[in-house]
Length: 278
Image 1 (spheres, rainbow, N blue to C red):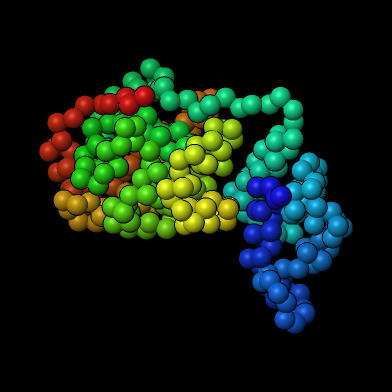
Image 2 (cartoon, rainbow, N blue to C red; image 1 turned 90 degrees about the horizontal axis):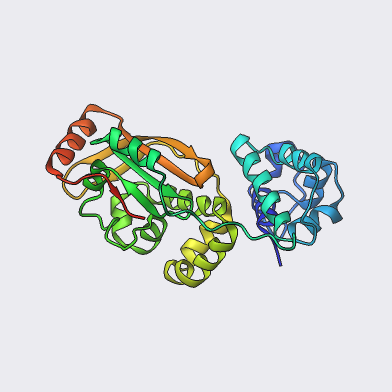
């Protein structure tokens, strides 16, 4: 049985063309990408050790080995961070008696006060599982008519993968789907597994499972939305990481004047107030 760490290494290896590294063409092979032999040689480790890592039979690689693999695979900073994180949770899965705390669904009063001061701007607090924990009236106006907040409690990950309206609302649905799937790796592993197995995976189907296991590190660029009541909206996202709570506060800012005017119109039509859902 594989591990998240092994899956990530194998996925990155399969995505590299040997020619891009100046390696010779060794002819037709059964699977695409870089051979284990070539990656092991570039990283300075044995093929046998690399095989054990990819297959989940070695779950505690040293920091020098991880750094060597990151160099050999040409990982960028975000991908290196993900590699180290996967090594941590993969090794932790073998530690007896460890059980991460469940995801917090309550929002600290100081964070709620920050949201209140942001009104009527567009802002939301979520956890790594995608639970929408609190939001401003501006966020409610932005998502009105899309179904995102209809569930009780609302969850962005479930919405993206199971509600057909999400594919219309998010102009770049594939990028958002990759973001939501990736963030699940950063959530508490025990509750993650229970929630994924019991609820999300059966509803979301193979599209979700495929994206989850690809380990694509998202770039989180400009957000493009197709609001039911207006033109396409273009927004930048500023994220405040509430690491002690395993939550994040996201503020959405218009990219252009057209979006700013449309957002202003949506917010003026909304008579909602700051809402803490948890």
